Image 1 (tube, rainbow, N blue to C red):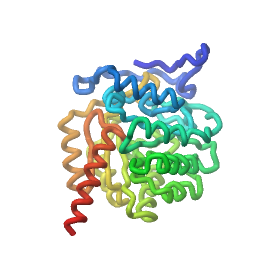
Image 2 (cartoon, rainbow, N blue to C red):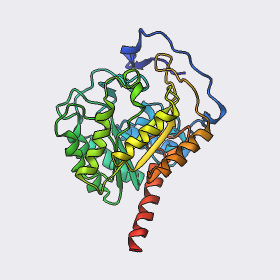
Image 3 (cartoon, helix red, strand yellow):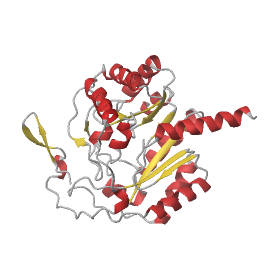
Image 4 (cartoon, one colour):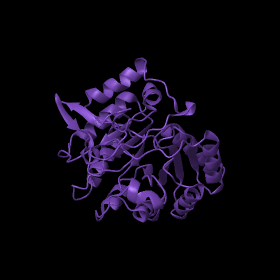
Length: 320
């Protein structure tokens, strides 16, 4: 189990200072279906080297993703822009919180260079929340998208954005940059927002994704949920209905895993068969793509799934 303390330049600094004085939550023993292999191999090392040489941040590392070994071995990585420090303090997230540093304006070029070196057909770009910036970091998303388009025009781009809460015009600016997939995670059911995602607003996040479809119907939209936080099956299905009403195309559902004892506790580990049922229900509700497994994360197999969907769509259009 990870601790709340990182060693930075020899100093002991809290990774989540706002959680330090909270009482410890219990940690449930993980079932067998949650086990993952440790990252090994030459391809994993090569991906790690490209990330480090380009001085980039990945959500794979910062959020402690359980799939990092598999994804990096396949030369897949989700780049996290705008630094490694988030201005929010969600109860589920392992990304460092605090006061971020200034925006690194050369980051876009370094990410584009990494995309070329890794020969990525599909890239996922996410970020920390930057409530300290006037536009929430929207222009930086635009700059990264443009840099990738210039360096590797054949690469499809998926973005996973913050909610740009109270940032007038920010969402529209990113939509107009025309990513192939616009992702923003609802994360959990509305009832749990106050305890799990207190800095966000459920219906604002839902409206953000609806706005993407209103402004550019050609863009695919995507969102994700964690389960195991105390939500009911009925609440999950209601969120699915809300998503479909907002025109959301892709859905991911995965098991919440507790980063430390100070984070929100896992209420239960959802059985793989229940995930299978969620997938069946979601497809029946009209989602174009669904990934629902214990280890599903927002960008897990995102490129493979998107390429398959785009090929199917193109084939259907060719048939008239």
